[in-house]
Image 1: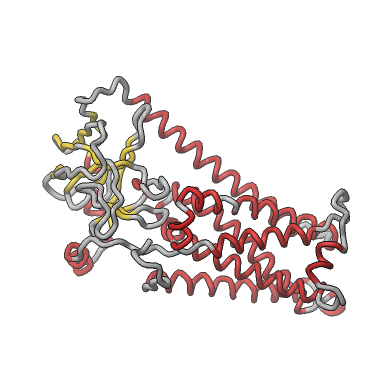
Image 2: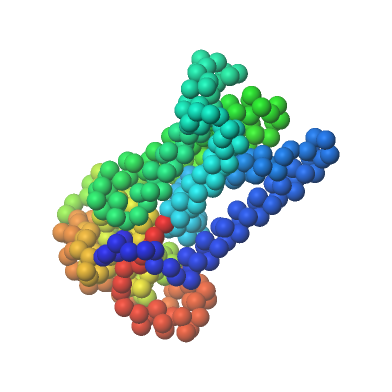
Length: 385
């Protein structure tokens, strides 16, 4: 989110991300054509235009499945956070691929009618009660409309003016779009192609998405249950041992679950400990699953940032989150579970000597990069998806 509404602020990582994504789409289309020419040679060959329609359609399906898998995958492995932070980019490109598929299919199958092709699509087949003759094209059109709404409102302007809650509810329609797309492909191939390829792709994709979401939900439930059972009878003056400083990698956090309370993110950065609410003020994203970038806690969902010392967003932003008092005794972190008012400044707890977690982090970072990171001031990172 930026102060003003402007075009995407490109950086090196975003360019690499998009180039890799576009190269992957191009490679998929080429491989689709090569495999199709091998499988259906000679008199059984399929027209190139039909192959392109199918290639774009299956590509859009796979991209949408990837979009839905990124969230739970990022909860299991931080390496998927890069995909999560750029998920809106992936969603817009998914719509573009689906639009290309729709335009080619629309022109190929309905472009020669005397009446408006869209009217023909909506009225030529009304067998909604038949499995074998169901107008699956309407389901594809519904999917495309939803993907268009999501792509058109992906800019921060809409997120700000629709309000975060409305914007979030709107973008939850991606699950409806996926359901419509699955039915579109399933009913379409049922009528035109007896091959098991498409049912297998649909089945594996649906099972994968459902399994990942259930597993991520179960993981969160178990984490909350274990945290609640480990700590009970909390009072305002209680100080809870939440583990060793060595358990937390540099510039990352440990999430503490307490009974009947919001989760707390305990961050370790450059031999300092700070604790803040795990809930981002933007759309309740899990701050503890993010990391500290340029001195600020950065939400893994949309890049909202907060200073760990006071829970405030860097100027000119005004968002605030609750902070917590912490101590370090014999390398163990003691946390007072009573939240302080959002934006309350708390001196970080410090500890001496380099930990094993910092050794691991420093091995991944060159001395020059480390000096540069320490020198840079805290500023909002713009994650435009």
